[in-house]
Image 1 (spheres, helix red, strand yellow):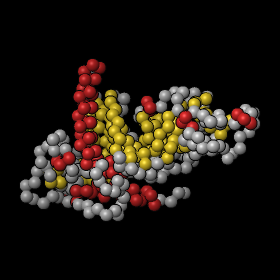
Image 2 (cartoon, rainbow, N blue to C red; image 1 turned 90 degrees about the horizontal axis):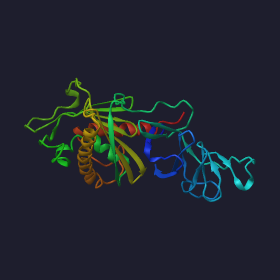
Image 3 (cartoon, rainbow, N blue to C red; image 1 turned 90 degrees about the vertical axis):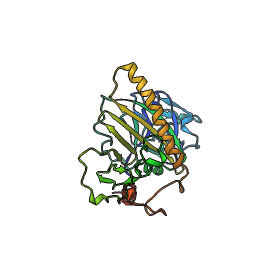
Image 4 (cartoon, one colour; image 1 turned 45 degrees about the horizontal axis):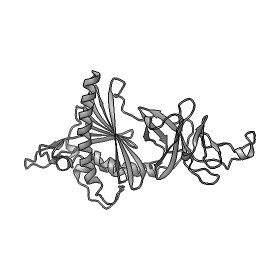
Length: 324
């Protein structure tokens, strides 16, 4: 987990008003719920009294209530009520469970992984995806660390092999560059694959900056976009469960088809196609060892792996930044 980042952890529709939701994220048990105003809260899923899971309890007003002895905790993790002591009795500060600053935006639930100093940066997303797009969602569980899943979507070398029957058709095995830039924690990638004609691939330093928008964009710490066209995008959120598991939320945003019934048919067939492609990736990625990647690990990368090299280097930098 990278510090001081807004992470997608859930889709907005997964948290229903009046219900608790227990999930594992970042290797920790968490509980999420909505308060009376519909705002989402996320705290550690353990009562500091006797260790019971708060997710097994219920939502009372703006608090989550422990199912064991009725202790109530608010969105900041502070204990508010100890029934055995009486509702008017003050709650000692030791009755506190860790909480995450939480926001809801773009149909996702985001949590902040650093200190809440009330000056948190804006939620990162793709600026040109707006309400003119409709989308469908799909979810996939991968038994690897989320870093492996991210790197797969930054990998332009694998296309003609993993996806030789789908998006990798054409035997474009030679990779020029790729031209890739990292700015403001946005990794932009222009794909320049071609059929091997016996010439050597161009280095990224030999390539002019493309005059088109990047095909792939990764925004730290865990969202990615494949810009198929101005009107058609694939977005993935790579959600860390623990060091050996992650969840991928896939969305196809489109404004190609807007007539409701036709749009639904278009989205249904698109969902089938995207699931096929994602499963082609998953089949290979889950065989990688180790299941987690990092800068300096025992892998021998090549020129075409430039986006992965940039990603690993930036992760290393972020992990080494000392808190203020």
